[in-house]
Every structure is written in C-alpha cells, then in structure tokens.
Amino acid sequence: MRLPAGMPGTWAMTTGGEQMYADDLVRPWWEALGIDCPLFDIHTHVGTNDPSGFSATADDVRSALSSVDARAAVFPLTEPDGYRAANDAVLAEASCGTLVPFCRVAPGDDPAAEARRCVEAGAAGIKLHPASDEFRLDDDELTGVFGLAHELGLPVVVHAGPEIDPFGDTLLSVLERFPGARFVLAHAGLTDLAWLAGHPADNLLFDTSWWSPTDLVTLFGTMPPGKVLFGSDVPYSTPTWGAHATARCARYLGLDDVRIASVLGGQSHRLVNRAELADLGPAPGRVPPLEPLLERLYVYLVAGVEATKRGETPGQMLDAARHCCRVRPEHPHRAVFESVEELLDRYEKHAPHLSTGNEYAPGWDLIATAAIVARTPGTPLPDL
Image 1: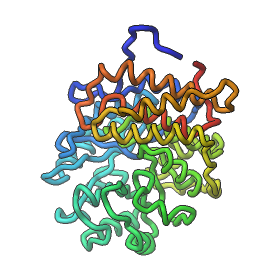
Image 2 (image 1 turned 30 degrees about the vertical axis):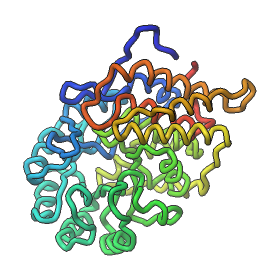
Image 3 (image 1 turned 90 degrees about the vertical axis):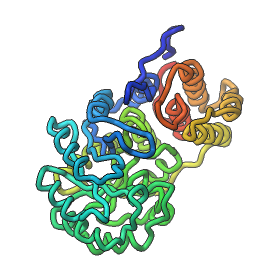
C-alpha cells in the first residue's frame, strides 16, 4: 500500500497548529489486524501548561480518538499551580460522552477533599503522577484518596515511567490496605514489571501507554489478559498508534478476539462504570524468542526510536536497519522485512515535512511502528 508519488499523507494529532503524528501513514498496519470492537483508551491528557512542552486540548483528544472511533478516560497534564481549575475544565469538557473525566490530585493540595469533590461532580477515576508532582506512593496525604477509591471501587491510574524508582513493597502495601480500589500502573508498569511479571495482584491492572514492544509483549506474556488495558498517552502518542501497538502485541502472544476486545475497551468500560471486572483466564506464560535476523533488525529500530524521542534523527541506526532487511526471498519472515522497509520509506519521504512542536523528532511513530512489526512476526500485515 504505497502512497502515490508526491502525496504528502494526512498527518493527525494537531496541537497548537502543529501537525504532530503520522496516523494516516500508520493506519494500513492497524487496519490489517482486522479489529472490530469498541475501543476505550484509559490514558489521555489535556492541558497547555505542562513544563515538558507537550500539550493537548479536549478538541485535540476528541479528534485523535475519532480516527479509531474510541472513547477515553482523560485527566490533566501537569499544572504547576494546582489541579482544581484543571479538574473543573476536564469535568466540563467531558460532558459529551466521548471523554470520561478523571481528576488529578497531589499531596500538598488537600488531595482527598479534591478527589471527593471531583467524584461527586462526575469524575470516574483518579490520576496520580509521583514523578512530575514529586511525591511518594506512601505519602500520608494519599490515605484519604485511596480510602475513597476503596470505598467506591474507583480506578486509580498511577504513573510508572522510567524516571522514578520502582514502587516495590510500597505498592504491595497499598494494594493490600485498599483492596476495593482498582490500581492501574501506567506505561506497562515499567518501574515494577521485572518483579511483578507472572505474579498478578487482585486489584492491580496495567495500561499499554508505552513505546517499547519488548515491554508490551512481556506484559501480555506474563499478565492475565484481564489485567491489561489499552492506553495511548495522548499527547505523547495517539490512539491510532497506541491501539495498533497494543493489538499487534496481543495478537503475537496468541490472544483471541474476545480477549483482545477486552484489552482494547471492554475491561476499561467495566472499570469506569465500577462494574465487576471480567476474568479472562491466565497469562500465556511465555514470550516467544525472536529469530536472529529479525532480532538484528529490531535492535537497530528500537535504538533509532530512542534517538527520535530525544529529538534526534535515527542516523546510522536507519542505515543499519535497512541493511538488515536485505534477506533472501525464501526467508520465512520476508513479509516482515518488506513491511519494515515500507515504513522506513514513509519515514524518509514524509518526516522532513513534519514539525512536532515538542521534543520528539518528526516521524518517530513510523520508526516505532517498524519496531513493533519487527518484534511481532506472524501477525497480519498490509498487502504491499
């Protein structure tokens, strides 16, 4: 499915007048998976004051969701001056039904009272960000927040990104003290996946808002499918990119349509409606190893993605990845190599015409999609 010569492609996820991400150029790989179920994104943000420089309005999020006909939980980005006004804005914007409001709270600003106020006004859950709001999960001021979540069966999405230390025993203590709360470790539980893998807790779930296919396939291989929820992390990614990454990794681990439908939306719908969560059986229990020639390709691609996340080009990593694609015609995964080449062609053709307006290099999502395709051989690919 090559674009005609000179066709620029339609770039999605526009914020502040900038065209950020290449949803339409990634779409053939999403469509090839044949997904036909309601989507619910458990991890999106709105706000324009985050020190990271990333921003999104409610209209931006709705527009991005419309590309895959999804609903989403939405909560504020970092607000240096506190969250009361930001929470009110989320509650107001979420009235149309596409966006389900979550409140964001932090110690130092009476978080328990703010959480209760927002829940009584219609918030369906709570977001905590221990990194940007600089607190620990065992902060005494969070006891009332967790108590409210326990009392009402609320979801609590907790940032678990690479810049913070693992939660470790603190997490286990919180889970045990507040069994009625439903905790969701964001970003594939990156901080704690190494020791939690294969040991699910009753009231702990994970979202897939992370770019590394290795973490996603590890999550799907070691956690029951009922514990995994699709999340995109708008504006750091898009629902199209995130849904594709989530569904492709789930297919690779052998999840059937019923379980994939739960991951992509069914379980999150139950979560925000405070309904009983579905038990979809055990984890697959293993992550298939990569064939060596695919592993070479995958390593260069993920190194290239990491560079683009710093605002750089993939550089020689792109050249090395192209060299890896020159396999013999009879190679059993030749279609994977060809698919990766097409994505790299699209990157080289279109990235120079894209400006992200944030620290990511233009076209990062095309390189990241290539890495996902390389890491999940045997999953459906578009007809090239």
